Length: 203
Picture (cartoon, rainbow, N blue to C red):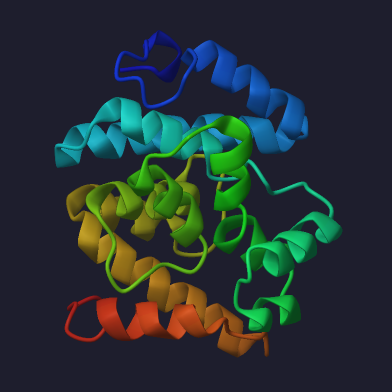
């Protein structure tokens, strides 16, 4: 199913898909907005292959980057207001827009479904326990058609063959990239690696 043919019926959000899309269009630059539409479609395709509710996949794909273009002060204020781990202050938007951004999705978009909120929360750093929907959003963001990096075609093939193997592949590649480029590694990324990669059988 194409994403623009989908009609929401499950009352997961208190408005239509078109209204949700309009909210995202207002919150994001055009290039980022086009990215979330591609992630939505990829998430829906993965949902159909894995027996996951397509409407949930649509919403998770659309809102995963809702907070991506907010100013740093919004995240710093949220970390303090909600008494989140102060270690978060040592990172930046690449981590914050997921690990903190789910709070904006909940309070501003009135989305309270825990599976969708956790899909936003974990889409950059993963988690040792991820539901199928959370895995789908994690992977859809990584392999959507606009992505172009070494290994992305392999990532797509693996993920559409086996969602869990895709999670392991992405997690390994991400950690390898961070280490190779002397980037800081958010602690949760290591926990995700230890939970998904050893014993996965991926190369």
